[in-house]
Amino acid sequence: MISCYNLKTGSVTMWKIGNVAIKNKVVLAPMAGISNSAYRRIVKEMGCGLVFAEMVSDKAIYFKNHKTLDMLQMNEEERPIAQQIFGSDKDSFIEAAKFIYENMHPDIIDINMGCPVPKVSIRAQAGSALLKNPEKIKEIVSAVVNAVPIPVTVKIRSGWDQNSINAVEVAKVIESAGASAITIHGRTRSQGYSGKADLDIIKKVKEAVNIPVIGNGDIVDPISAKKMLDYTGVDAVMIGRAALGNPWIFKEINEYLETGTLIDKPSFNEKIDMIFKHISYLKEIKPEKLVCLEMRNHIGWYIKGLKNSTEIKNKIYQTTSINDIISILDDYKKELGE
Ligand SMILES: Cc1cc2nc3c(=O)[nH]c(=O)nc-3n(C[C@H](O)[C@H](O)[C@H](O)COP(=O)(O)O)c2cc1C
Image (cartoon, rainbow, N blue to C red; front, side, top):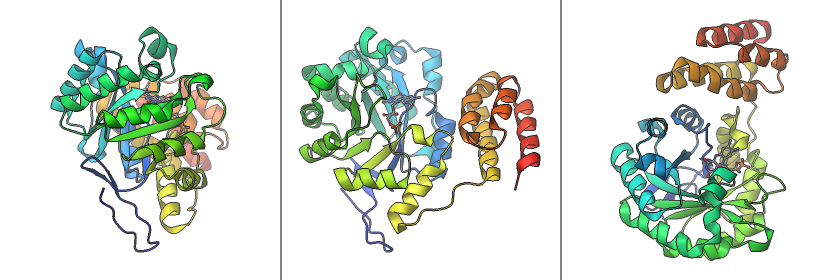
């Protein structure tokens, strides 16, 4: 592992997954329907060290499903980037990993062993269902490691349920199968998103393996990011929900880790301008109808808590054109802008 010394604080910030250098300790979580190329470009500009692309199905890649192939779009400026795959069958994992490596050239392939949604974990026996079967984990991870010449990582939860917390055992299996890093979300599959992420299990996983570990769950600000890093000793932290409508969180955490300073929150104008940028990046990869649909949620997140936000959200929900969205936001800016 290489490292680079921060002169201001003496802290080590750069780290590596396999041969992939990562400039800081803050990474974007894979989030289905969110972590596409447009969103990843935005968080990258805000200082995110590594982005995980939303999960794609191994079978959908295998059968060259067009919608899924579209989801694989990535941009040079997003590097380093990890593309996540979910599935349950070794052979289609191999095919999907090879296809993605050969056609999209991500820096890392990530395997999903954490998804709790029934469609994935029960119907497809994929995602977190794999946690119940360490033998299968070994088989899949070694197969993917042998199939592509780039680092392979795995994202897990603490276990299937409270009675089967096996993240330490699973992490050792993953390491012995040749993976280059592990992300652990400190919740069981049956917890979904309820309760609190368990920092102790994250710490145990970090202590049990020699490959880098990324800690995940409930990081909402610089303080909670530092707490996870200090308490568990993980190499980096992964941010999911707290980055929705708040890509500035990456800058805030980096600044805090490097200098101990809490920087100012983005202004009203900065938020609206970020929405405009988000729309323009999305326009490059999706048709207008999808841009409008996708931006509905994002705009809600960006303007949450601002004056008249509910009224603006309702207006945005009724529009189906980008020009209308922009004109609603322009008026909002005239009304409240600084
Ligand atoms: C909308 C949404 C979509 C998600 N999609 C994925 C996914 O595709 N792959 C995955 O491994 N985890 C997925 N997750 C889980 C996150 O990566 C992360 O583990 C979880 O949100 C906990 O982190 P947080 O507390 O920072 O949000 C998703 C979470 C959310 C909220």
